[in-house]
Length: 134
Image 1 (cartoon, rainbow, N blue to C red):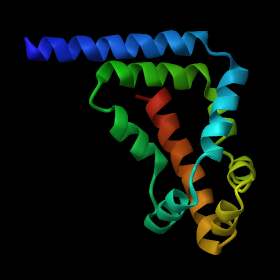
Image 2 (image 1 turned 90 degrees about the vertical axis):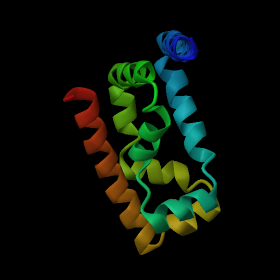
Image 3 (image 1 turned 60 degrees about the vertical axis):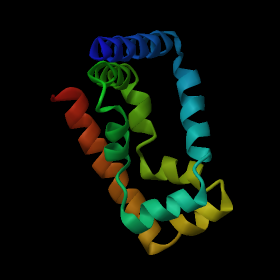
Image 4 (image 1 turned 120 degrees about the vertical axis):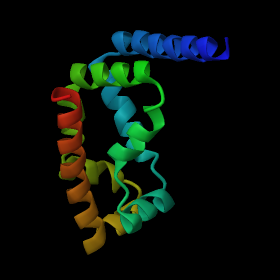
């Protein structure tokens, strides 16, 4: 009984998220992405740079326990692929993240630039494979 309840909750969550995805406009999504990126705190960015944290692995770890959510996430990424790819360009990502002066200091180091460039490429490659080839 408990397992059936958990399964139903997973389906309901995925369904609710799918309804939101279907209703969102490209402009709304872009605004959301920009605001989300602007909200990254310097201490989190510093940790990501120092520990070479991969944002893709972090995302997948948050949704991997719900196969319905994995499917909805893949659907959303396909639907908005051009927008997602736009924000995986190092220059665009840098321009947004560096609006916070503390983040700019972190990104303007050799380690920060290296991390940003490597993560953009790595996340693009992993997303492309996961979204289009699996």
